[in-house]
Image 1: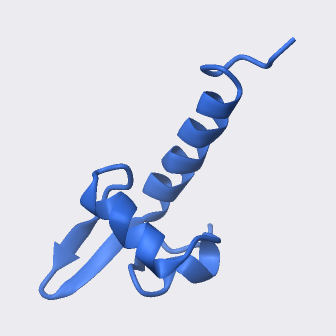
Image 2: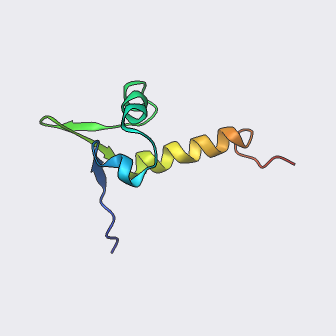
Image 3: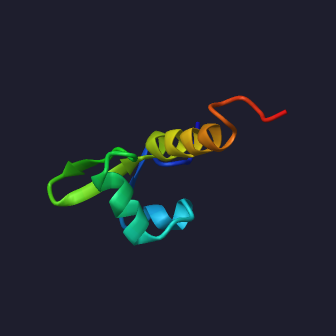
Length: 68
């Protein structure tokens, strides 16, 4: 059983994902990182952070394949 949370509060996500709070909220606003709200609290699913990182890696590697 994993001890990793399923989602992080938006305020704590920068402590597990090394980007600034301002950049994180911009990525949420533009839809690049998905999030959801419960009451007034905004949460970011752990998988959304993983997916974002994988997309960034794929883009930097030319669409998913490694550069020759």
